[in-house]
Length: 142
Image (cartoon, rainbow, N blue to C red; front, side):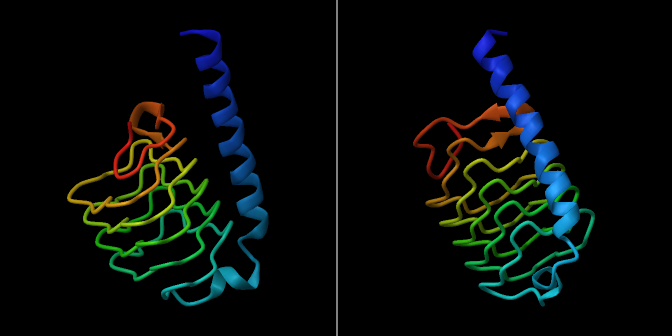
């Protein structure tokens, strides 16, 4: 593993730890208690291990939000801002991600299947086995 790759992996781990610490302190913020609905602002909230199956979060602000091991099967996350969100180990089967922004998001060990990724931005996302999606990745992780 070259030095740049090691540095990138270390930076990723530090980012996850930082997000974890921040999300834990902000999860009691009022906006995190809002009802699941299109356009909701749940940035930096923590929904780890929750069951959010089938929720409609079209256009929601989910930047930096933790969805670790969360059940999101069948959810609509089209056009949602998921930049830097943690979806580690989440069940994302049948999720509609069309037009979503997943740049810098963590998808390692997420369960994917039959997803709509049309127009989804993946640049800098951490895909399975910590593969970092290349610059310009739209619709799939390159």
